[in-house]
Image (cartoon, rainbow, N blue to C red):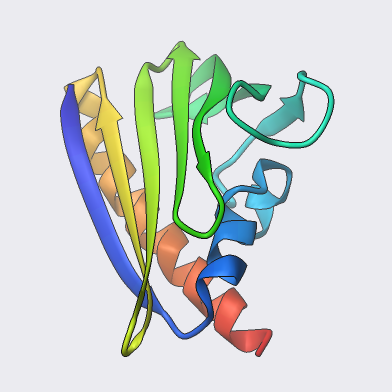
Length: 136
């Protein structure tokens, strides 16, 4: 696996950051690259919740299953992606003196996806920051 790490400081409390990153149904608000995403496990989101997703990556159609692997409110959210793309994602949320630090770690099985993913996540996190801070 190849690992990308992204970090951003958000001028909002940790619970607001967690609410946005743990709401996959709302990812389209700050991750415009997301395709179709449908929760298939009934009930509230927690460890084991799964979604089916489809979209395009590098001009290829993909289909994946996304499973929540970590759910620690206001602290950590983790996902495993399996299918056309194999990946693991962790969102670590830490309060600090300058705001909330969000660190996104993305581990990809396919090294060809590393650089496009890095650029996309950097852009998406800037969008998340803009939207979250605008709500205040």
